[in-house]
Image (cartoon, rainbow, N blue to C red):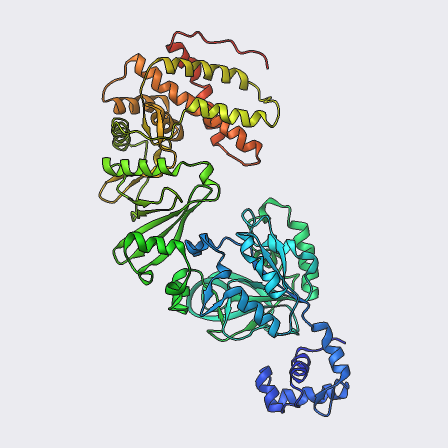
Length: 597
């Protein structure tokens, strides 16, 4: 039998208290008026759901459809806003006020009588596996955690959604918010006085959610646990299955999908007083909640910062992420002495980057005054601390003065006389990428073989020029320059520094800054300090062509791996294909006729 909400609330309180609670006690627990409780008890007695002030066996049966089946804890995300601590462990495994966040939540669920708990993991998933043995939870892996939003987590558990709590692993509830019976689908909310950038709820008089605005003032906001009843789960799963494969769905929160269909999906709000539900968007917010957190947290990253900057953990603040990728996980932080950047090595970078050469390159750049940001790098592990430049601008290669400064910095590096162990050659790199392509099968791209033969011929001619090998930055382009408010330049990101042809950095710069032929010649004259002779021009232009060819082949590999290189694919190709015949002609090589492909 379907119950009215007030009937459910009264029966639920009676089911939890075998001592026949007073009507006043029931009113306090349910939030109903004393008169409503009295009237509801009479109605329940007439339906034989209550007998002599206690819940009857029929009442227990009437409650059963509202029993919670299970709980899902979402723990797959990267928690990038919790950098740098999230680089070491997932946010849900942090210890707050003496308890690990996800463990506290699991205990609260079990104390409420909910034993069927599924934890969906992704980022650093292995860190959560111990929960299976410790608490008897089920572990489900979400392999799409890095490419999709949290809708992928619910996709992985869609077959078990029924009367289900949906929880976040990093919430902290000061009191147990879970119940083993819930009347209807609900989203927990708290009141935000004044301005807020959170999701502000719009509701009908019944409390049903009708919409959301992002940002507002003096509003109830979405925060904390969510509950799906069986009807909501059935409809939501049907919608998710219909929309999951759409490209636009990948980046959506599950809440966004719900709100797109809010008229079809009945969910109410459950209000909580301030302080009960706590969600931490930053380390600084967590520290405000738990002042002992920084001193007690087990973090090699914080220990590294303390050892280099000679500060206390409590002095470190103002964390926020700057950049994330395969080779760099970087975040901003401050101490009493200034602002800094912490760079954490990405997974697999030891196969891509020679950190000892990088560290030596950074030391050289610091010595030459090319990089004013560098403070320290651990060459064995790869973490690095640099100064943060507020309001820094990237270099504009279309500005003549900035272009001139970049070329002069390039020349200063090349004439340093320094030596690094790492070597980098555009043609050799391109051939390495080509071998990776051939492992997948024949390369049937029209014109590929002919362009490759020309690149090999050009490489041989460039080698015969006898230009010296010297230290190159090897990622030398506009975005790796920072210009501070006083006009000081810093050349950053030295991961690929090594011994290369003297024209390598020039070639990279021209291609990656997409310079036209007029600006290529202007950049070369700035680099050389004079108008180039033919022998100089053809060599430097030749390295530009090989740079385009190398990264074109790299793009073919990336696309074969399913990654989208985008417009850069064609840009790289163009710098090779558009100029190679012309440069070869400067060496006296006649243009080769194109063979039929």
